[in-house]
Image (cartoon, rainbow, N blue to C red; front, side):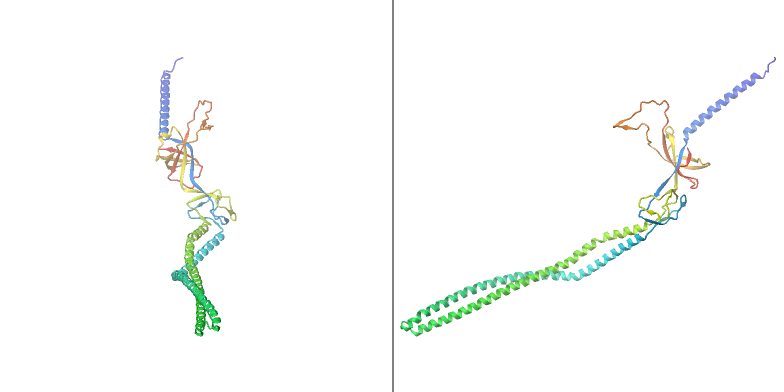
Length: 399
């Protein structure tokens, strides 16, 4: 049977083609590996955005709730209104207390203006009455000395009168016996009368001195009463000044109450702090809102970013600021631009348990070691708010 002379040639061409195909496959594999190493790629990524929980800062019934779940709100849009009547009353009460305090301060200032001269007069009166008390005391001392001298003079006059009487009584019996003359008896009687007059005058002088002493004591008591009254007036005048200081010290407290009441009233009306999407709403009008209890969540639509988990072997080729191509799993035909903001520095290790102060190392040996993944934060530069949702799967390629 004759053989085809072209068969060896075709076999040779086939071997060449096989070598070329294998070589091309190896080259392509090397290029893919190099490209993947130079431009790290991962589909272990998810879309994120900043979000806040909206919670009231004051309590009360929800009077208005114009927003709905899963709707978009612009910055400054009304989110809800809490019944403001209690807080309006509190503000009016605080303003009334503040006005009342200002009226009391004005009255105290007018009293002080009127009392300024009274304070000076009261101080002068206190000095005068104090001097008067001292003068009256000196007068009492002088009167007491006069009384003492009058008493001594009265005792002396009484003694002379008694002596003159005794002398007369001795001479009168001798007259009948003519041992003495009539002139001597008359002189003795005159001496008795003179001594009696001197005694009566000393008694009168003693009574006058005692009366002067009593008057001096009364003047001292009157001066003491006037001093007490002057000191009381001075105390009243100074009390008005102290009252003003107390009222002035109450100003900051009442002003703070007014500011707090006004702030609480403003907090009854809550608006959106930024453009956002409303989500997780499970409340209706009429519900009782409590401070700090979240009512719903706002997703910040101004800034979107992607958290991409890259193997630790690829982290070395990722730098902050590197451009990134982003693709959403739900819209693979759209490419978005991003930029690396940060690279994570830590994840929870699987063998990081500590028991009794010592590391707990499992007595097992894993023949296959999985590469740890670190989160890379990528900011989206051209997001489409209608397509981006928190938790959506994304594919990222670092350029």
